[in-house]
Image (cartoon, rainbow, N blue to C red; front, side, top):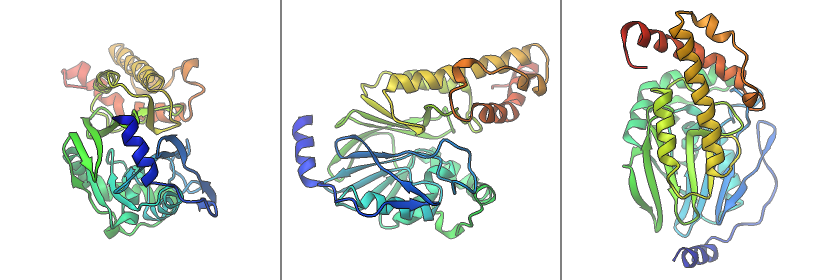
Length: 313
């Protein structure tokens, strides 16, 4: 059935001929094919800055007979417009659905460029978007030097986890929370591609600021290992076999969790947590020192509180 479905899909979604390179922030945007009628746009493995104009997160899109499905839209309406042009070079159908995996701005601020599409996310994610939207806009503007029209940063509608059909295209949605408190993971059984959002990082250190708990994140990764995926698209970094992405993300989270626990158990402060040699296994991963420092500043008070007062992590 899967082979017959894909064969019909290929006939209905003949890609358009590529034209001029699509540029954003003086760099070309490229779409990497990862499965039949499925592409990924990889963000730069950098922190937000004026030099990258906020293009640090991944996007992916699926061309279907009834319209293109976009998974995450980037960090600004301006980026979204460039992404729309890029998608049109690969799909003969416009974007009809935008699925946002979580509330971080590099994954949903581009929605405004797709105003004719239906924007969808989990209810938990939408609540976080509503709570943090103004602060996130301030942060994007400060770090990238680009002004955003606040009225254009609208909230998506909500969708429930489980089986969903967009047009005639089936997807399976999973509600997670380990990375941000509201994380949508998408499984496409037609191609066996797993879209992890920021539940998975690969060749780029994990950002942990809004994680409800590193142990919870690891437990949810173990749940996702049970899916029969062929390729995984992380929120940051290149696509890879799922176990490769799971292993690297989980290994880093386990080390970080254990290190922060050990320092807290010794009764030492955050400065001692920072004064550690990062293991060689993580030295080849982009932004490890940067994200480790942020994690200590943001998470270490929870580990102290758990030790002193028995509060949850």
